Image (cartoon, rainbow, N blue to C red; front, side):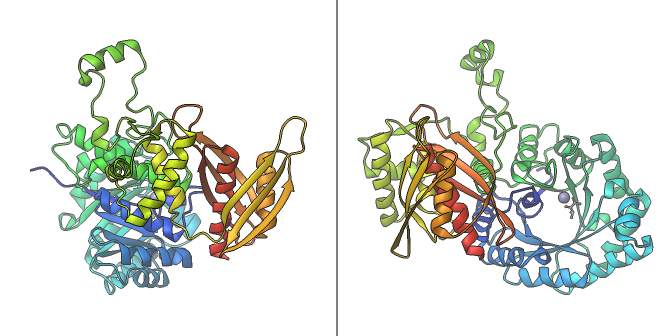
Length: 505
Ligand code: KIV
Ligand code: ZN
């Protein structure tokens, strides 16, 4: 039996701090539920004191997710700890994660505190947090640029105060695998009672070493790794969960039989969900979950794989939940075939929901000969949106071309009442967005617009992802839409963003 490594997922806290990655409460619950399915041990659901939205999301996740420990971040101040405790009230298993910076640059320039005062604040925070729950994590922010002996002192005192996990963050992605290994060893050798607590690591990817550093720390003896799905996070991101988990699994021989409780077959679905909801695309060549991760292009490689997969594949796509794009259904497929395939994809629908999807499936099959898994996922997500829809698209008519002034005429429905208007623009997409704004009276500033085909072929479904800044709520929101018609996909994406903005008004 090897050593269990605790997987602490911070996609919903540090990951959500990626520029433009913010999710609403419905989306956060969906991610948390998927993380539970994935089998992570701890979900850091947010930073309760940061905003009422964060607090609400942690509360809802605490009510909706049972197995993992739910954590909230809190600075080493009473009001943050109280907010964390309040947010976690309904969690079956909860953790307060408190932190303060310990490096000279942070202590002197950011906090303007003495080192003694920082230590006292850390101890007080841990003691105070212990009044609300038995599971308290203390993080020494910017640990890797801190004095090692000072770090040991602060960990010794916070353990005495009741911390059950101590975390050694590489906040700015500055360390190297060898140096981090030595730091973890130093702490393990120097700090009294360190064997009574969990030793955790938390790495950022500024120099592209977050995963390597985390794994090096595991070798040194750390038994919790903090990471995010797809490696999203502040600046260059955090250590990628999928890479750490698969490295430990594939190279268990090297990592001295360390193991995690992650169900690796849920990795791909989790990666896709996070990418869709945050609007942050996974690069094609991203390890484990990128589209090319299991594609063999060179003739020699293809030849080798055909003869014996392990010549060029160190893990199977199925191990991470990637089903090699199967042709599933077509025009003549029936309800039963559709239901079975949806079940295989992880969707269990009620009879009514199946009926709705079957209707949509038939309409799609009229436009598109071959229907793939990605098409089915797009249908489900388009039809059963996570966020309640204020307006729905009824129809869209666009006139465009080199000799025409682009004009869009749109009909929307809200609570059974129909609204119609038209607008002209620089192009068909611009005209469409303007018409949507005229009908809904919601004005936004388009920050980014991305389009991609979900499957192969000229008749593929197009997915549009927009990021829109809404001055009325001072927030940037991600909207998504899919359709075989890219202008319609654009309209749905912009309307999705407007609907989410309306929920916040
Ligand atoms: O990077 C960091 O230091 C953090 C801490 C708050 C744990 O995210
Ligand atoms: Zn961080």
